[in-house]
Structures are given as C-alpha cells and as structure tokens.
Amino acid sequence: MINKGYIFHGYHSGPDANWFPWLEKQAKAKLGINLTRLSLPNPNDPNVKEWDAYADQHAPAEDNLVIIGHSLGVIAALRYINQHDIKHARVILVSGFDEHLPLYPELDLWIEDPIKYADLNKKVDKATVFTAVDDLIVPYPYALAVARHLQSKAILYPKGGHLNKEDNNMTTFPDLLEELTKMVKD
Image (tube, rainbow, N blue to C red):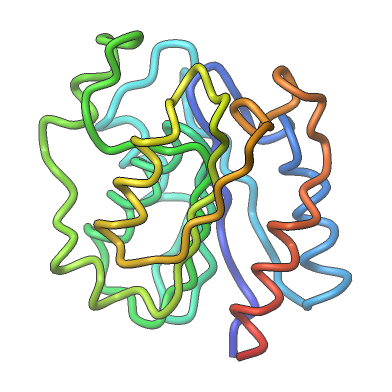
C-alpha cells in the first residue's frame, strides 16, 4: 500500500514554496498519502553531500514510496532512490535535469556522479515528468531527457515556465495530483 512519500524542493526554494503545501494537503485528504516536504539545507548554495545526508536522516527509505522532485530537487530525488534499497517507487519529476545547465554552472557538482538509471529503473514502478516549452530556467529538452532515461511518461505544456510560483503563480498543480492518483490507484 502506498501511503508515504517525500517532496524534494529545488535551488533557491524551500518546502513552503510553489505548489508543495497544496499537494501535501491534497495527497493526504484525497489519497491518504502522507507527503513530507523536505527542508533541504542551504537552498541558495546547495551542497550535494549535505542534501544527501539530510535526505538520509529525514526520509526513511522503504518500499512503495512516492518521490516528487522539482528542479534541482529532481537530481536530489533521483540520487536518493539510487542510494537506497527501495522497491516499487512512484516518481513525479517537475522541470528537472540531470546534466550541465549552461545558465547554472554552480550546479555542475550535482552531475559529477551521474544517475545510474539502469539501477534506478529497477526500483521505480511508475514515473512521470512534467515540463514546459517556455521554461527558461531548465529548458524542456533537459526534462525530456530525464523522462527518456527513466523510460517514463512525459507531459509537456506549451506554457508554464518553470512550473513554479514565480513564473506563473503556481500554488496548485491539479494535473500532478491527477497523475499521482493514477499512479497509486493502478
């Protein structure tokens, strides 16, 4: 039974940003899933080892988890799955990447240790990637590459920016909740 999961926020973000609080409430009320919004340390100057250690300490690994990541939180979420003995994960990734972003060379340390998709794909039962054509922070081809690596469904919006509050005042994300509902009901 799926009743627990984690939300990994991104760079210059936090657990109370964007649609994260709304999703936490909706997942509990409509699906009975306790989503924990992780408060990853130093989001304005994120350190790979600090985020890994925080996730290890605050997100106990177990089977049948829901894992949600936004932006840099996508890499953090994928690293978390790679580093733990998890089975049957349901994964939703939003505006993510797993390779060098020209606008953000300071994040290159996050990609030095590549995601091991061959291992990761054995742990993930279902995955969906959301992105938008007009995302100027993480251009959509990067998110689509993550979807290809995960062999997952990809949902590409013509507009939506970085699918966050700053780009289009996204404080809710009904399509994500609908996708999560399908993942846990199937």
